[in-house]
Image (cartoon, rainbow, N blue to C red):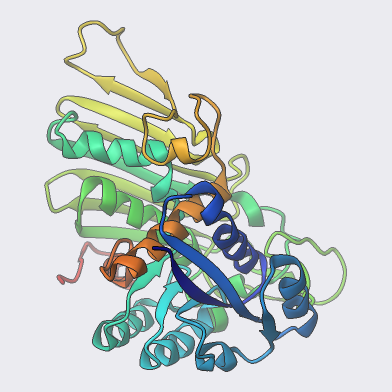
Length: 388
């Protein structure tokens, strides 16, 4: 029996449209999933953007007041893709109304807001999901399986990074992501949250760390409200101050004794979307980079039949989720396919009535690491990650 789930999406910028397209594709890619997403209502404070989203994405209605999404009795799942400054208020209202919640990372402007959101959702007993989509790449899931099965032995080293030069041009506009009042954290929340989530999924909980930061571009052209994305460029008009960080780095020690280096930067030249990791153990090593997300480099020390060094593996139907998109190896998936897998996993958890991952508990685990990095900026010392 197919379960229909009514969905309301709040925030119809780029990410809101990505989420909405993902829901529409689920019945096509996951034909036996037992759920039918129903796009009930979308909300955006810009009327034209909300109306266009209804027209082109197939919502039944639209609004400029996000409260109407939560109040709608036909909405079971509230999808939050609004700016970080709105996460706490919207998520709290949704939880109190008994709605399940999908919120894009970092779930609030700072670790304190993430903790508050996790608390209110847990107390309300609603199911939650957070947008850590990179973990759903088939070869990342394969990496997780290999580690859980012991093929890498005891983990010793982990290096994770997210180098995305979307703001390397100093004329990239001052969108909300560059303003602490609206976004809260800069690269720490935007990019490093993905790095930390991936690190803790692959290598386990982080125990202690020391971090640093830098803002390389201190002023940017003001953005036009309701137009463009954080990739937009403007060479004329007034400028405004950048009030959060461009670069973050941290030395970390994991609870299992492994050591690591984590980095994130939004103004770096060269990399475009280098969300990547290298993990080493006593029996082997793995390398993965989102810019080549359908490739994995694997080294196993007990593989006598293989050559010295890494072996290149391409994504294929034998890896998790790949076969839902194509039947052949080497025919790659893309970014929005990962968002589709992510959305499918959450709808399946609602169908089954059980909490999956990544939920707000994983977002809180990431937030505790980000909080320790923030403290280290001030103390310039190693900081312990707050225990659960």
